[in-house]
Every structure is written in structure tokens, then in C-alpha cells.
Length: 95
Image (cartoon, rainbow, N blue to C red; front, side):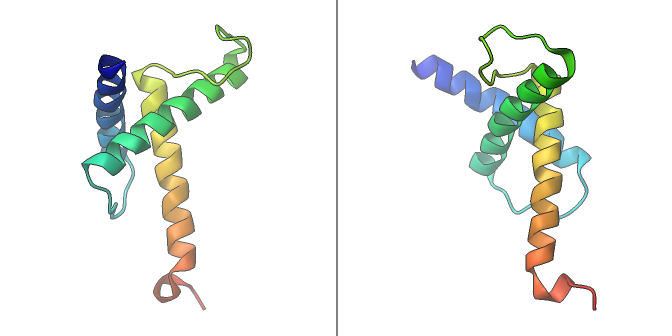
């Protein structure tokens, strides 16, 4: 069990770090936030892969994707988070 959690953390850290490199902007995430971003991105990438390719190995459940799908999913989440964060900040609103 410990090794599975450690493996998820390492893959999430790699995927989240790559996503942060590719998406512009100031990202206020630490190591844990980057790893969580990558882990959630893995599930988003797996779900998008299922929707696009209709290949399912878990009977319709959301499944973790490969590293490419994880990075793409993390990039989508990071981009959406940046859009939500900039719309909430009054200093960044356009008048």
C-alpha cells in the first residue's frame, strides 16, 4: 500500500511539474500541490482518453492515464484554475 501511494506521488509530481512548465502564468503551488495537480490530472486524462477512444479496462470507472494523459489532464486543470483565479481577483478584472 505504501509503495502505491509513493508511486502515485512520484508520477503526479512529474506530470504536475511538466504541466507547470507548459502552462504560462504564476503558479502558487508547492511540491504537494504540484503532485496533487498531477494525480488529479491523471484521472482527467484517463477520463478524456476514455471519451475519445472508448477503451475501458475498468467497466466505465475513471481510470488513471499514462504519463502523457496525466500531463495533458494537469495542463487542462492548471489552465482552468488560472482562469478561475484571474476572474476572482478584482485587480485583474477588465472594466
